[in-house]
Amino acid sequence: MFKVSCIQLKSNNNIINNLDRTKKLIIKAVNQNTDFIITPEVSSLFSLNKKNLLNISTSMKHDIYLKGIKRLAKKYRKWILIGSLIIKIPKNKLVNRSVLIDRNGKIKTYYDKIHMYDVILSKREKYFESKTFKAGKKIKTYNLPWGKIGLSVCYDLRFPNLYRKLAKKGSLFLSIPSAFTETTGKRHWHSLLKARAIENFSYVFAAAQGGTHYNGRKTFGHTMIISPDGKILKELKKSEGVITTKIFPDYAKKLRKMIPSLKKD
Image (cartoon, rainbow, N blue to C red; front, side, top):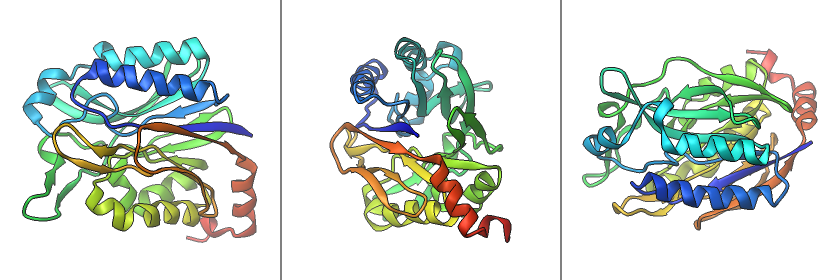
């Protein structure tokens, strides 16, 4: 058994401000005796403006937010998954990168979001991530002290084959840090998260952005931790905050043994 915490933010385009607010919520999670903390997608920098992102973003080596979170992980001896950072890579390109940090403040692995959010929800609400970000190509898992976790980011949620691959690699936990729009979130968020949990008999950790941001964009919030049988263990609807609950890895293993569907396809 271990405790996991998911943080909900309403990030802006000020990295220092976002780091300060994240720090306060990490400390709150630490005071709840958590073992593992997860932040949402684009925790450090929330912007749709490519020029702005290129001007502010840096490499992982120089990222201020990443350095700050690594120090906190080491100070409090906690595993922390930064849901995602906007990282600049060679040829002046950007990636949406989820970064796993151990309790010594060391980066253990990272995952670049594979599926780009290119959608037209209405005449006013359109998103074309592929114009700003380079898509990742590799799925990623990592053996935590309590079991294997499979990494993903936001729009990946709509591609069940990704999670099947992660589960078949032994992932008992699926991280889905997100910044779901309010438009799609109220229609699909709960159903999609429950489906990924149930069909793979995996715990789902879904830390989310939530609220109306400085640029007018509205994110759905509803940060959740879901059990392998689809039960919502904890949920935070809109405000910034943190949810914490106990996780029992053997329960996922038990369900997979009872209904061995992962071995049948």
